[in-house]
Length: 252
Image (cartoon, rainbow, N blue to C red; front, side):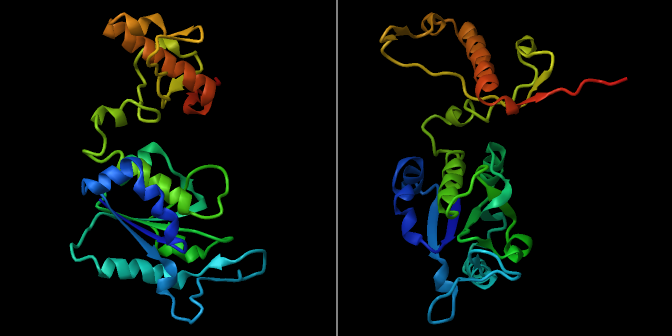
């Protein structure tokens, strides 16, 4: 997997690339990360990447020319003729980045991450260059660099060999979709779509008077499995009820 990050702040990624799963995946040659300075794709002496918006308004807008030239230059330099490439514009106006998006991206050979800045990006980038326009949540960041780092981390950990235990990327929040198991745990108005992860405990078995649930100490794997499934549903209902779709009552 190759990541190409296009940004006006290439130095930003020195930290995210040097720690955790991404660092280990790079060292194992599972991923190749290349950071590109957007200003290198300008042709004026000031390396201008933004301009005032047509129609007036506050802020500045990233120009289309440098972004198109950057992506086209990267494609021309690709001697391996990769065919599975996603070009992702990070934008507060994009579709929500979800676990299933990360799973889809993990099937690609290459992901180009375009980091938005200022008031926004010329809409022609989203319409005619990017394959995906993504947001990481219902809030606004100063730029797309943090979002790009998050996307890269979420995708990398899904690649074969990136994690010490491959089941770690399966049995976790947003990866568990089980619409038929223990339906009795659902209310009559809920249909399960996605579950958060179940609670985790480790030593000591008792801490400040709070013991580890007894079921986890008994060694009965079927009981543990049922307990974890129930607790995952309870946590989802408590913290993310939006993940449990309410059934629409029939109106005769």
